[in-house]
Amino acid sequence: MKFNARTHTCGDLRESNIGQRVVLNGWVATRRDLGGVIFIELRDRYGIIQVVFEPSYNSDSHEHAKKLRNEFVVSIEGIVRKRPEGTENASLQTGFIDVMVDKLVILNQAETTPFQIVDNVEASEDVRLKYRYLDLRRTEMQKNLFLRHKMSQITRKFFDSKSFIEVETPVLMKSTPEGARDFLVPSRLHKGKFYALPQSPQTYKQILMVAGFDRYFQIVKCFRDEDLRADRQYEFTQIDVEMSFVDVEDIFLIVEELMKIFFKEIWNIDLQLPIPRLSFDEAMEKYGSDKPDLRFGLEMVTLNDVFENSEFKVFKESHDKGGIITGLLAKGCGDYTRNQLDVLTDFVKKLGAGGLIWMRVKENDLEAPIAKFLSDDEKQNLIKSMKAESGDLLFILTGQKNKTLSIMGALRLEMAKRMNLIKEDAKPALLWVTDFPLFEWDEETKRYYAMHHPFTSPRIEDIPLMDTDPSKVKARAYDLVLNGNEIAGGSIRIHNSDLQAKMFNVLGIGEEEAQEKFGFLMNAFKYGAPPHGGIAFGFDRLAMLFVGKSSIRDVIAFPKTSSGFSLMDDSPSSVDIAQLNELHIKVK
Image (cartoon, rainbow, N blue to C red; front, side, top):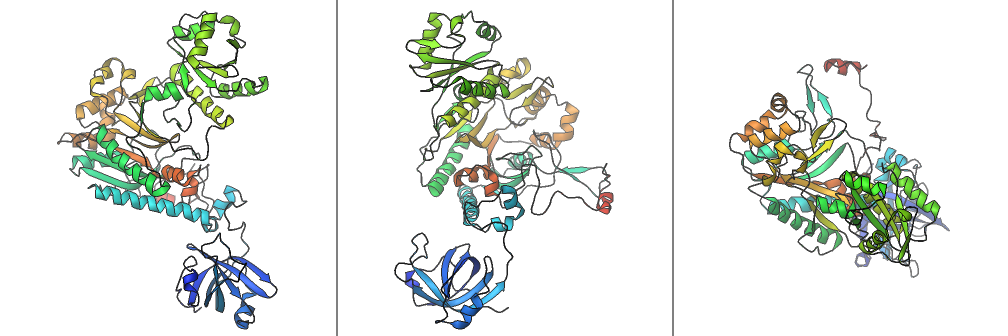
């Protein structure tokens, strides 16, 4: 089917083009027939423009246009004119002109689509994912992917300007424990052997530092077989960074400069540097989270000192066991009904709390089921510590420290929603969280796990504690948090084989297992490894936040559902028995 090459895109034309002959190609977005004159809104990824088929102007093209329906692919040729007075559309950049059509070529017809190709479409996400090629025609989705593209270009330009080299690391690698389950790929040539898809390029980028590359980055696909949610996918993208001869402050300087550019280029916000910092312990005690949302206050208060000598059994037992008593002030919520309080109690119980203590603040007194168990001094010190006033509502939780703080942190977020504290125009809140514990204890398996990964360096002064009390060892690790979302995480790495062996020992990884799984890295350290460290951004999550969405599926072209299924191409799918035989695999 012959058609002329386009002279302009659908978003190009303006009043300065009036009188010009143009050729446009695109999709029919809408069709209206008004008294014999047919109006078409023609769409491509650059914009929308109105084209007009008028029988008195060109009867042949008008007759041909009667066949047009939404989503037909067409090519038109005609003359740009100023729209008649009163018909302008100021919401479109092309809304003050249209094109009178001399020639129409229908390049392809289209069936009726399962949903309208419009923003704010009324279709379920499953339907949109099944027909993703239609969903991606919507202006909203295209803007999301263009912004993601812009961010990737900013990233490459920035790191190149800082003397970083982009190196592609393998997608087929050795299976190594990194916290989540690996995706395994069977080898056809090596019977019973498997590759793993990388959860991250962690070991490779450290080896690049040993190889002397000094500054590396990569926009890289990673794979983790873990439960999905709005901000997780099986396959995701990282901005991966590693540097030699650096300490924590050097990493921070590079990252903060990149974030300043993102804020300016995407949001037109001048980010003030340095980015604020909180230690892990401070973040947990004040906000109940290692990724706190600081767009609103609502800080938690530790109340152990208030109830140090309390005779109230719940507080006394918690204090004696080394637990924590934490409080939250809900300003002006003293009129909450018993039913509302019961709902909040159920909320924390589902998270593992034994219960929720609440108190209404009256004039110089507290109204609560436990008030009779508290002394007057305790009541007054509580009101003072919480900076409470008449009409406020207090919540208290007590128990094992980190678990209790996490539950109160979840209640903090729930109350922020109920109190409408997170405004749409709230200033973005960015912060560093530092000084994480190096290890976390798992009660079920009775062993320590690395809070980040087994290559994270402990603080130098804490190395002796690895032999005596690993729970007290702090890591040279850091996370970058934006609006309550972890967007990047990293650490200074272990670069000494003896210290790496000590780390594996605490984690219960024996010498033989360590050699089998990480021998290539430990051997590399023996040949002169420089001090090094880095960070990895969750690029999908970062793009999601800059776009203003709540799901990374809105910034990924072809995502999986929450159950890990691709509705468009029906994957995962069964494979032919011959393929399995080649791979020496039998499916039970």
